[in-house]
Length: 422
View (tube, rainbow, N blue to C red):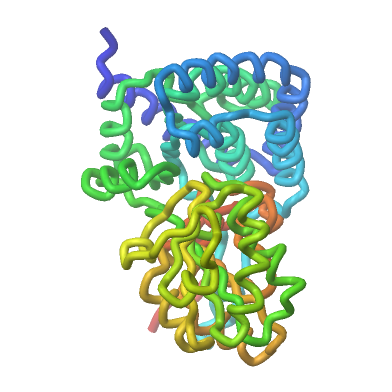
């Protein structure tokens, strides 16, 4: 039997050695690896779909919940997005080695900051086989090594993707250990990975609250994380209803199982009688259950899937066709509700009032704050990061979608001419 601890320590040692080679590699070499991986994914798309089919079949037989099935599915569009994401990453500026903020000091020295890789990054994720490619691509571009531990439900697809990533690394002359996919479904591998600070510099978890809670309790390696995505859309009293309707519908119904999906809709009292019945007609087409406060419940009377909201609904991430609705007096009450109940992920305001929009942007304490746009845009690909390794609603070290800069750090560099301190 495999000794999980010894196996994970072996992966860690290999990753640490590979991280030094990755930090030395030039940007052109790292980009070549990404292009080779993208080409391989396009070439072997049928094999990836077949591997994903095995995972989906096993997941359905095992009773995996719909939200996770949705994340597990590897559609043609998802494959295209993986390929496009890799090529978009290639086109991004290389952050490694960039020197900024150079200043001359009275002593004669020049002081600046250089952007450098973090080193070894461990990524732990459930379902979503696309994370294997997103994480590998961002780590390669940013000069890091990665240890990827996907969920057991995606093991066939992750193994297939790991071979294509290795092919790209080999073709570019980079060490194969720069991206290692943990080839065991034993949960003990997670426990080992998050307690190897001698090999791993940061952990990025992407999964449900149970996974994150476990890691928060057990990890001795620093983490970039978010616990859940309780996202809000606030329709202001000065909203353009023609904008509000499609945004509020898309934010909830585009996909249910994602962390940037709206879970609570706030509506200004002055426009609630106008906007809520129209929104209800849209939500009815998707059979969305509406959990409404007393005032909204009265306006929506007759809606077939209408229930009374409880206080627990304001702090619930449904990941399902369920939406909490609350009527508020105005902007102050909306901001207060969001800052009280939000998970600090993503919030949006729909308004034509410039001053209200600026107040919302300044005062809402979340990683992404939007004006007149769906919360579903809170995504590394949509933000032009090429992809994301995760989303952080922490404030240190990265916040929001974590792309290349979030996978690097700054160190001070000093240029002198023989100066000594007196």
